[in-house]
Length: 186
Image 1 (spheres, rainbow, N blue to C red):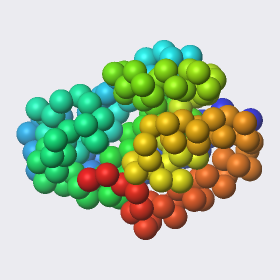
Image 2: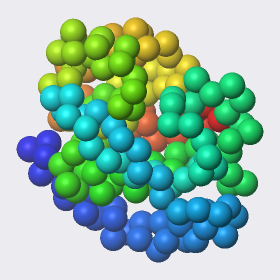
Image 3: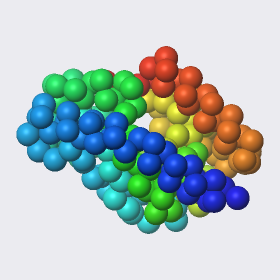
């Protein structure tokens, strides 16, 4: 049921959001040289890697590490990067990953390929068996403000509690967090 919901919802949103996504892509291209999308290597279900697109909010020369590991993350932002991140519009291209089955709407956020500590902790807790999500229980409980061990605890709680109605609750809480721009790293 979850995969069917994910596919149908992602297909519908892709159609509805096609024009806004094209406008965002154009805005990224016009305000900073380089591609509109950034494809990052992420770790998904079963610790397999996949490519995940985002609207590019950072300059092309930015190192491929988690934002919190950059010395001065704001110095790497494109002219509209801060807006894209605060509004979470940079995440919209991930509808593609939901359509292809690499991701779900709800699950643990996919780790970067080089986040060995996060990957190891998730594997120890069995979280690696889940399809990663556009949003998750950790995101609605602190998002970028949480240290990795706490994120993994929330991911493990999701693994134990997952259900269709819990997913709906997380989606509703996500919309609230995005509207309030709560817990977003710049």
